[in-house]
Structure formats: C-alpha cells, structure tokens
Image 1 (cartoon, protein in one colour):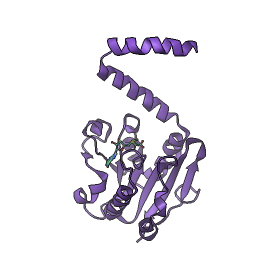
Image 2 (cartoon, helix red, strand yellow; image 1 turned 180 degrees about the vertical axis):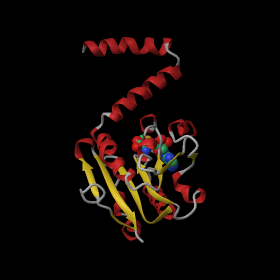
Image 3 (cartoon, rainbow, N blue to C red; image 1 turned 60 degrees about the vertical axis):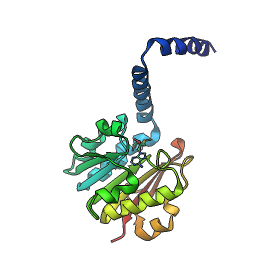
Length: 203
Ligand SMILES: C[S@@+](CC[C@H](N)C(=O)[O-])C[C@H]1O[C@@H](n2cnc3c(N)ncnc32)[C@H](O)[C@@H]1O
C-alpha cells in the first residue's frame, strides 16, 4: 500500500523531470533484466543455444533485443557463423555487427538464397509481431525455403499468445521432430508458459 502511494507520487514527477528517451532506456533495461531471469530464458541460454552452437554451420537468429546481444558470440563458439535479423531498424544495434539485416521474416526467402542456412532460431517472434495464424504459416514456408535439407529450426512460443504452430499441415509435411537435448522434439517450461519445438527440414 505504502509502495503504491510512493509510486503514484513518484511516477508523475519522474515523467516531468526525466526525458522520454531516458525513461524508455530505463524501461528497456528493466525488461531485459526481467527476461534474463525468466525460467524459460534460462533454459534457452544454458541448454538450447549451446546445443545448437555445437553443430556449427551458418546460423540465423531472428528477432533482436537488448537481452539477445550476447547470443551471437555464444552461437559462434564452436566455429559457427551467426547472422541476425529483425524487422525494426532500431534493433540492429543488438544484432551481430556486420552480419545483421533489417527485414521482414515473412519475406526472408526473397533476400536469402534457398537452402543456405543450417540452423534458424525463431524464438518469441510468433505472438510478438508475427501474430496472425496465416502470417505464421507464410513465415514457416519462407524459413523452410532458406533452410538446407536436414537443417534445424527452433520455434519458441508463449502458450498464452500462440496456437501450436506445429499443427500446421505444412509443418507436418516439411519437417520432422528433432531430439535436440534428449527431451524429445518439444521442451515445455510450464512455469514460464513457454514451449520450445525442435524441428528438422526433411531431406
Ligand atoms: C519479443 S521479441 C523476441 C526477441 C528474441 N528473438 C527473443 O528470443 O526474445 C520479438 C522480436 O521480433 C521482431 N519481429 C516482429 N515481427 C517481425 C517480422 N515480421 N520480421 C522480423 N522480425 C520481427 C520484433 O521487432 C522483436 O524484436
């Protein structure tokens, strides 16, 4: 209760005294700290990304935020070559320097040659920009085109925001499950309301 009174007084004062860009920066810092502590995120960083890094090859990380900036180095630690992409120009600063492009995931196959990536990591993009079911299907078809036969796809998604993307007939016909971290093709983190699906493009 006391905290609420303090907050209700402090917030309008902060709005008057602190310039908007500074407030947005502080909000983004707090958000990054919250995401890094999320149990689903901890699984991603400690188990899933190292497992993908172990394969090496050409890797594409889709969707860049402050808290993903270190992922490029993590994914390259076994000799891989990591590229990054995001639809927002302002997010380029969190991508891999010299290997980032600003682009729409739904059109990714118009920019990138067919069958040119070994691994695509699409985490938290469905439900956070690619929201409509039809858009998700278009994105999946575009990703399948740029993935090598046998190439790997990670789909990470929030159960309260996204309908299971693996139920698309297209996913069933173009991909098979991938037992990436000895947990089967799906790693659920119920306490985070999050699911990781591990897929491989059929040969
Ligand atoms: C919630 S963030 C997830 C970031 C990161 N992939 C992660 O693991 O948390 C969603 C990101 O997807 C990007 N995004 C949304 N729609 C997109 C699209 N159509 N093409 C490319 N990036 C998109 C947003 O700009 C944002 O940076």
